Amino acid sequence: VWEIEECEVRCSGSFSKAIWCYGGHFVFDDSFRGGGKIVDHYPGSDTTVRRCTIGGFCEGRLHAKSSWGILCWDLARVCLEDCLVEDIDFIGISACHASEVSVYGCTVRGCRVGAVLVNEEAK
Image (cartoon, rainbow, N blue to C red; front, side):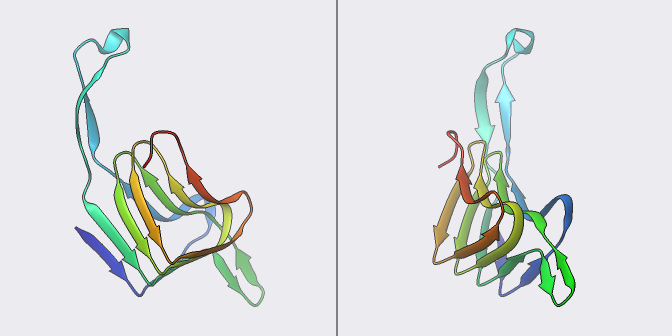
């Protein structure tokens, strides 16, 4: 279990992620040459992020955005509570590839492409 509380996480640059929660892994059968089938999976550890400020830099003359604020990927299980996600070049909060993401009381602002992205596999 990962718990991140009352932190300021700032980063910038091409393809930067202020917080990247990468989950477990999938197990494929032995017919991978034919496309393979998922026969099992192992989720990643639970992650909770509370009362944090996440994003790029925006102070005085320094202004550099993070590419993604919080990127949840491949079976990640993430709970976001009372966070500020700001100054993001692409997406503030992304739930992708069978990740499970809960968002409570968060503010997302200053995202050039979108505040929240949830793909069809995520919950």
